[in-house]
Amino acid sequence: MNIGDVSRLSGLPAKTIRYYEDIGLVQPLRSGNGYRAFRQSDLHKLAFLGRARSMGFSIEDCRSLLQLYEDGNRASADVKGIASEHLDRIDRKLAELAEMRRTLAHLIEACAGDHRPDCPILADLAAEDTDLCEPSRLAGN
Image (tube, rainbow, N blue to C red; front, side, top):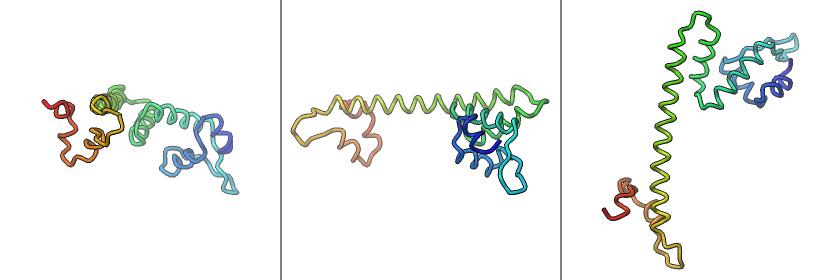
């Protein structure tokens, strides 16, 4: 299969496929004229990588997961460890986003949104002290 076929079948852009080749995640064969010749196994790896990336796994996580996938003697604990670490990162990011949302909601609520130039949103963004961004400080507590 050529890169266009593999792109269509895997759902990955050709540029992404070339990048995955450049960093060694896939190694398609090369024909005499230098064209890539993808095998079914390459397509399977690319689909695997596409699914893993869609779940937010990093490139290095994907590299490790792919190695474990190809290792018939792997320990599922190793796979679970990678997935658990990724879930922890997601949970931390969700907590950060929730705090960001609370702060922004409070700022929006505190802003009169009228014709006056006073704006707590802009004041908060201009603050040099990051503690000023805390909702408790904005409420005057």
